[in-house]
Length: 77
Image (cartoon, rainbow, N blue to C red; front, side, top):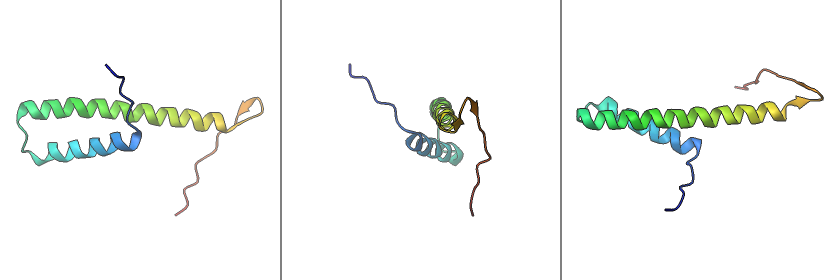
């Protein structure tokens, strides 16, 4: 059996949004709702992992000398 390549954050988030819309529609059976909810929990965990890894990468890139320099992220409107 071939190993599946993990989907990226954007794909996970998009699938999660689609699941939320399906659940909010109220048209799913209880069993289908539970399956969708389980899949959603898995997708949320996948997204959280991806975000944590990205945050760690940013922290590593921002290291200065022997210490870690943290700065506020400046969002420009």
